[in-house]
Image (cartoon, rainbow, N blue to C red; front, top):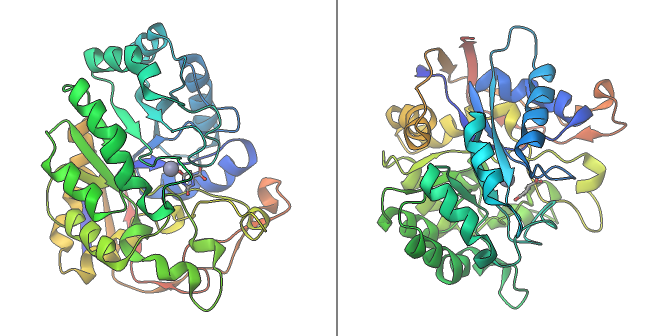
Length: 350
Ligand code: DOR
Ligand code: ZN
């Protein structure tokens, strides 16, 4: 069995920088024509100048012959000035602004402490049609970690949507039925990305036979009834839902630690894993919309011209990926390490 699609894009990925960037970029570039690149570097990408120089480093790290196009983002802070939003839009290379609530996740210390401080920036984004990408979790430690997305929607997202009705917003890596229902009922300006791992796993995966750091990400995996709602949204054909892997590489030693980092590395099977989900749901015919059409339509970008063919054939994921060739004395444990993925790429156009 094989399926040919317009080459997909990844609307949410962490490519990191320097050695890690060189190690992981080929996996994304092999599968995806473009990707929305998250700005949460150790020193976050807060200005257009920083985004443009990060873009150059990504282009320089591309494999030979690769036409992969990084779509850059800015990291929103309490102090992002309107002029920076204007520069971002005018550059033609910055396609969105990412809102991390301060303290919500990896490298979010520079994030937003109170979204009302950003209202001028949001107004500028609304006027310029520059989307806001939201890490939708409250950071309030009084709120149970499994409820943080739903509470964020009630306390913060609803307010933003009401105040900025023309602002394009993507609820990134939506993980709950509440999130899916909110997005489904919201105006067409509101969309969501879905990761492969939240479509494939429920929270039991974190505790299968012991504590599993390689199944820990943020937002954290949720109950089975939420996973089912995510799959239903992904295969629905609704253009509000599209592919965003949230592939987030962390070296093995930083994951297998007393305080392990959040993030799963899925770029090595970034489209194949979604094919598994759609196949399992008997919805492979809807994969192309989700992976290749809905994202560009939302962002106002052209569809890709190249195609990619996936074959239903199992392959064994290596137990780890050595980072030494990239200059890091550690390894990366990929999603499904030592287990099988049910689809592989037969050919990938440039
Ligand atoms: O699991 C995650 N990892 N969630 C995030 O929001 C950030 C990401 C990362 O950068 O490692
Ligand atoms: Zn992310």
